[in-house]
Structures are given as structure tokens and as C-alpha cells.
Length: 250
Image 1 (cartoon, helix red, strand yellow):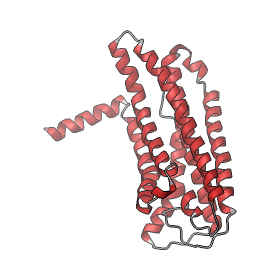
Image 2 (cartoon, helix red, strand yellow; image 1 turned 30 degrees about the horizontal axis):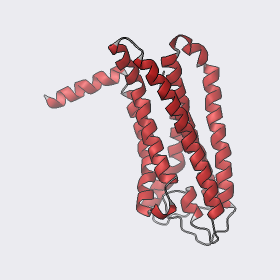
Image 3 (cartoon, helix red, strand yellow; image 1 turned 90 degrees about the horizontal axis):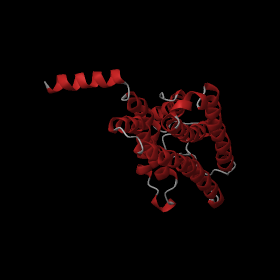
Image 4 (cartoon, helix red, strand yellow; image 1 turned 30 degrees about the vertical axis):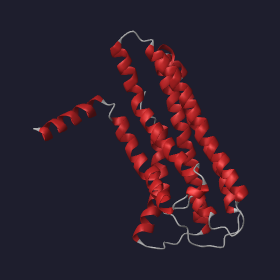
């Protein structure tokens, strides 16, 4: 099992969609963005965010197959199957993003200032001058689906994984199996916790400062941490880290 190339590629594009606009807004206050540019950025941001949710689910299934069916791993998780799973995750992202972006950008906008670093669903929705209850319901249903469904599938995978690990006779084998899942499980908890806090919390609890902090977390910090966390499974990286820590202590 390797660090999933689909997730790495998706998160690279994901940060490129938001970070340049974010930096531009910080450096030059009141940085303008056209309606077409706002629509495009929102569409790709939502597509890749949903894609990442389902790719983490695919990785959970990958861990399940590797631990519960190790002898059939190469047959079940062939290159063709991996490509199909990644394309499926991306297709779901495209479809869900199309629904959300269409529901938001057909609204009439009376305000011109987006109170955010980039064009996200909720900040753009606040610019409308009409009642957005229906749009909020659509956004909530889509968000609920793309967070709870992947979380549920990951939970099922790990229930089966843990039951298999507990049946391993060797303590060393159990430790090795748990270590294999630790990095993925860490990122799953961080990713879904941020997503659920940002998109499923009640409207009354919305705070501009909290929203901005969350946006920095899930658009910059998490994509930055992912390769670091997965690299800690690499023996050469572990040895180099131990040597560096040893020198600092000395």
C-alpha cells in the first residue's frame, strides 16, 4: 500500500485552486474577482474537496483488502480497479459540485464583497438579497451526503480491519497491522472533523473568524500534513528523523 497518487494529485490541484487567490487577497486588500472567476473557483474547489472525501474512503478500502485479504490484494486492487475507483470519486465530485454551484450562482446578488479568502459556497450564498432557505437545504443535504457516506464506509472498513487484526496470533503482527492504518486513520479524523465543523454546523454558530481559521486548516494545513504523515511510514524517513532527534538531544 502506497500513498495514494490520486489523493496526492487531487490535493496539489486543490491547493492551487485556492491558495493563489488567498495570498493575493492577503497582500492586496479588496482583490477583485469576476463572477465567472468566482464560479469557476467555487466549482473546482467543491469538486476536489468532495473528491478528497471519497479518495480517503477508497484508501480505507485499500487498507481493508491489504489486511483482510492479503493473498488476493494484487488481484482485487489491480491498476485498472484503482483507476476506476479514482475516476468514480472524481465523477461524484463533479456531479455534486454541479448541483451546489448551479443552486448558488443562479441567485441574484446584491452585495459585492465576499467575506472570505476565496469563493466558497457559504460566503457566496450570503451575497444574495433573497431568501436562500432552499439553497441552504440543498447545500446541507449535499454536504451531509459527501461527509457521512464516506465516513460510514471508512467506519465499516475499520470495523472489519480491527476484527481481523485482533485475530492475529502474533503481537508483533498486530502492531505492524495497526501501524499500517495509523497514518490513514489520523488524516481521516482530521479531514472529516474539519469538513463537518465547516459545513454541518448550525447557521447560528457561524463566525467569520472561525470560518477563516477552518478554511486555512482544510485548504493549506491538511494538504501540507498529508505527505508528511504518510512519509513517516517510510523506514528511511524514520531513520533520518531518529538521527536528527538524537543529534539535537546530544
